[in-house]
Image 1: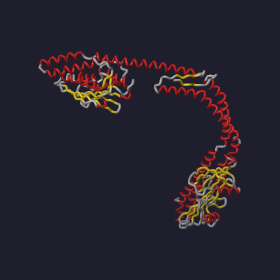
Image 2: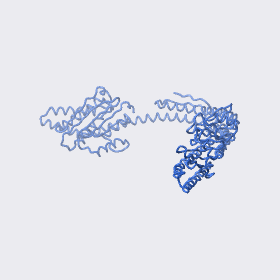
Image 3: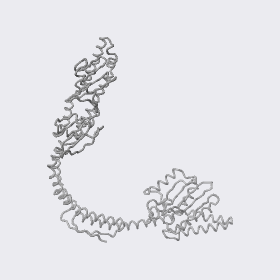
Image 4: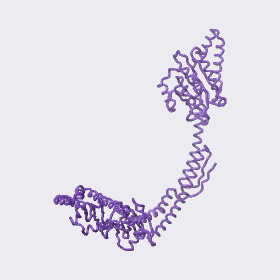
Length: 579
């Protein structure tokens, strides 16, 4: 089988990659640096999130400050001196009344100092018919200050404050109007704070407003701008920050962001003309598209070059390896290239050839190893077993037990015939199983007074399966040699065969009491460690032969039997046969 690979090259792959890097990537990187430099110059001054964050920060600060002012006003109205003056004013001695008035007035000065936006704070007490103010001290009513507050109270305000021209008031009353507290907020201070938000953009404006009141405070006083701001106010009073949006009004597109000022029941809105945002970007649009086109062409050329010079030959090499994975070693790659891939293809061909030779040699070595292990196992048959069996026949004859003597002789002849005459490496499971039963029968005749065995028949589906020779009898022999040594109690051996799909399981168990946990753990460790040197006969010999022939998962596995002794399981995975 031949795999054709075409194409010629003057340069090596390494040289090609270097040249492509110089020719294609260096200009691309230079262009990218230039575009990024111009873009960074723009982004340093025009990050839109900075403006949004600034507006949000000021809205939160203003909300907290106004909330604090309102809380201080409510706390002032609950002052003990003010309440006492309200209920007992006009009934006290003149001195006591004047003293209470001074105490109330003393509370107003710290209230004014709590915020830079507070211009004045005062309170009207009906019981004494006076207004007490931090600015104008104590004044009898009617007076101009109280008349303005009284007029504002008659209005129905949808917000928490009252507006009178350029003046803003927080007004609270108690006890059916017997106490009226008012705080004047500096409108100029508020506008000054709003202008700080607009410092990032020359064409940006900020205002405070609501759907009911329209634009209340704004950084611009232009009538056209006031009309624009009214259209930018949210339809409903917001409770939290609203996602920024783009909105087109009279053909002009604006970037708009809203933030709630809950203490005033208003929303802070910042709007920026789109032209200010995109004017610097529009200068680079043409350059960007040209660079994008160039980059696209470069990427296509680079991708095609890499495909021809690297991807295509590598794909051929990958295909060859995949063919090797299917165990098809009759493969040769022919190459007309003059670069590194030519060396790789030639090395691949040499590797395949060596692999074929190595597999053949390894297979022959494994077959030889199996033969030697089988011969070793046959040569390890204990001669004492033969001598003792003949002695048992002699004793049975002396006792005139000819039937038992004949049975023992027949079993012994069948046993040695199986070992010495059958030179095949594999036998039918049925015959291998019968050989193990013959061995059990011989041992039970010899020790009829204290050892017996039970077994299950081989399933019909397993009788014609071929298995390695002498894999069951050594396991059974291990039971008779070690499980019942120096015991006086009755010994029992249990042998069985079962099948689970392509897995054959042969089980040998005993009820011996000599197996300790330490000995059991040693057996498990030695069986699990296939590289460990040591005893290679009997149980370990069988384990190595099964693992070698049937692969991982096959072999001898030991555990504690439910009968008290050792349980040895011979596992054979037929689907893995073919080592």
